Length: 213
Image 1 (cartoon, rainbow, N blue to C red):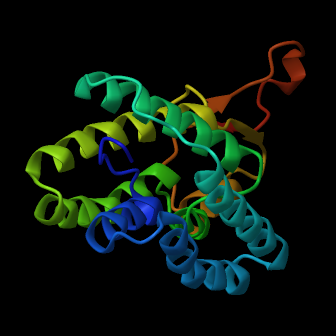
Image 2 (image 1 turned 180 degrees about the vertical axis):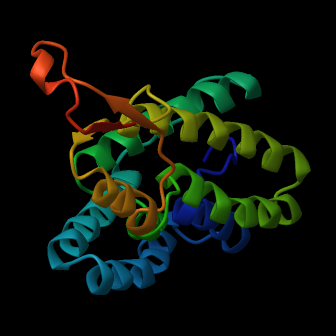
């Protein structure tokens, strides 16, 4: 906030609204999150919505109680380390089963319906926010905000999903046609098929066993 760099999501919208209307940012943080909390209650569940609501309220309160001055004037350091700390914090919150931003509710719901990661969903929505910020705060803060959030999304991926860029599954089964049908038709995933044989007993070398990777 002291550097007018956006956090993205509802927090980013709240910062823009705070700069335009000069009203306490916690007010916007709670108001802007209400529609997403309702969506979370309807689409994900009551427990998730309650946890999300508590997280948002606690964040709004702490932003009023804790004063965080600018640590450095170097904008590159602010963007990189700020983005890292944002991604680390949000990632730990998501990994713990809660959220602190309404867009994460949509991301969590979208993950269940598509193959996109949470960071990809959030970054897509934030693109619109950054464009709006470019007109309201200026091109330079918007560009640094994009750098900040790019760093944050990469850190978020590492915290939530780990360092692996893919997930592989190997299935060995005589019912290979059924397994192939489920993976390709039901889950819409690509597969590679390998024929395998047992190697310890000569009389079983003709066993029809398929390994699907």
